[in-house]
Image 1 (cartoon, one colour):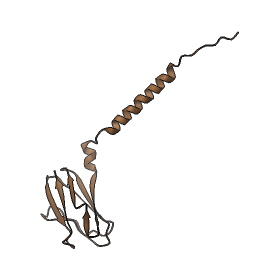
Image 2 (cartoon, rainbow, N blue to C red):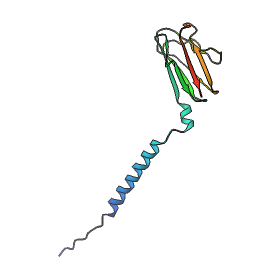
Image 3 (cartoon, one colour):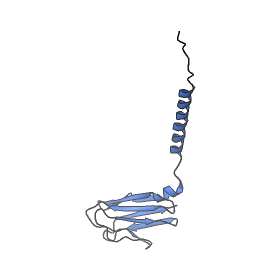
Length: 123
């Protein structure tokens, strides 16, 4: 006569609970805001095209970087009205970047196209 042994189901239940806790912890970690070091590495992008800076107004925090990308067939520059930053000539596909360390309002323009104007606001 064979005897049937019932095995407890503890092991699979414990594994499922551990998996649920791990998934919940990962979701909570993903929901956390990015730390300041990572945020400072990320840049705001300003596209240059159709004789415009897009967006024409960007607001950032001190220590953040802005990258301008020329997507136009025309050459352009990024030149601060106060002389605090300026790019060389930017041909199609070329980039210029600047990190803003101090709060303020930084108006800029294109040397070749004086009607092209924009502003960076640093808080």
